[in-house]
Picture 1 (cartoon, rainbow, N blue to C red):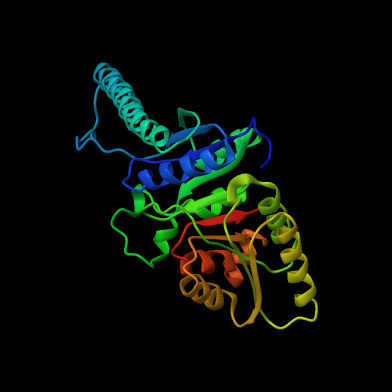
Picture 2 (tube, rainbow, N blue to C red; picture 1 turned 90 degrees about the vertical axis):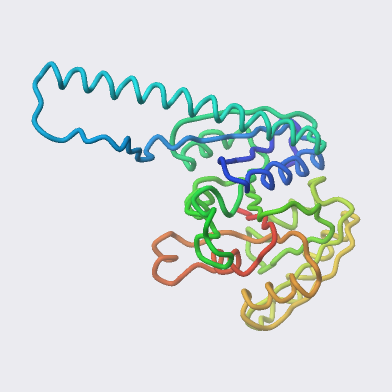
Length: 292
């Protein structure tokens, strides 16, 4: 995340959650002095119904006329979607620039979100998208749909950090790293130390879970690494279930952003045994930076 020519890519859909995505993406772009791109992906597989009855046996000429009419309607609908998306993206672009993003571009694509992000990953320093979206406008906080239908699939599709944000923007003042000593969270320590994203902010490191003889040594390394990079660091090893401990400490310490490793195991293992990533995301009500 320290290459100046790589961008912050914000993935937005046409819901009121998009404003928070744009705000956090603008914050990140400003902190890293990176270009921002707003991406709107139109799912080509969405089913549409016209309300018209096209059943029954029809002649060849009538059939050709019907197909031509449906094709014209599809083309008109596609044009309307693109124009609506352009207006939507332009509003978010102006919002991001007003929030201090150094520059902001916008792009629309048809296709699947995970495939589109994987295709653009080489040019990205940080992905940003909402944990809720258009499909969750009416869902209740705390429900599984709060995570959005795309979160796990998208996170598994890319290998760059992903900032998943909640509704409403608050500029981060205190950051917590859920540290477990694995390679991905050690990579997170190095990312914090070497990126301007969190410069000047206090960093809380919490290592939760079963007692381990290596834990003091591991967390001491993390604290020393960040202290050497001029961060104010508070590091603790706390016993207990990680989901419960992290959620409790986030609230007790008024943490504004959580960093954690994401989906280390296969989708099949997560299906059988559950996923700690999803559990922690559901427990954490604040923006969460997922490390891959």
